[in-house]
Figure 1 (cartoon, protein in one colour):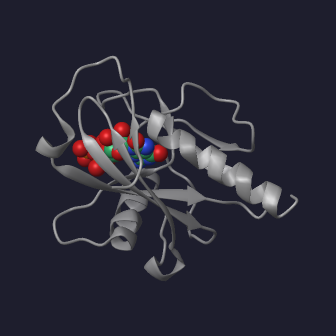
Figure 2 (figure 1 turned 135 degrees about the vertical axis):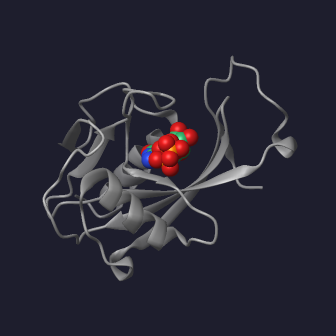
Length: 154
Ligand SMILES: Nc1nc2c([nH]c(=O)n2[C@@H]2O[C@H](COP(=O)(O)OP(=O)(O)OP(=O)(O)O)[C@@H](O)[C@H]2O)c(=O)[nH]1
């Protein structure tokens, strides 16, 4: 099994094998200058107020690119073509409330102006990130981006 990131390890949860995996499509929206979009989780959701990359759970029978296009439209009013979604990395995260498989995708093209349709806040961030707290499942992305930038000498 791929490495599992255990969030809030001090909180008890069911054994791994007994929980279903929830698939989540997550977008890393990148500007030409490589800043990326972070949004805050709306009130009423688990980890409300934490910063994350936008996205959400796949519906039954839905693929990652379609789910991401639907979520980004529902949450942010953006229109993206599934063909512009670049699958990037996957990460399993073991939260007390759920075991999730995050499908991180890069996006450099979209249409429409950002609308915070769920009352979220947003920031276009560089590295290091200036907002906090960050959702545990969003943290590996920062390391991956940093590693890529070092490699490309950016
Ligand atoms: N969107 C997003 N979700 C993440 C990230 N990292 C991470 O662990 N997650 C987890 O993935 C799951 C996404 O669920 P969600 O609640 O945002 O999805 P949703 O919009 O479909 O939820 P709902 O329709 O049940 O309210 C949550 O358990 C969340 O903690 C991230 O960077 N972005």
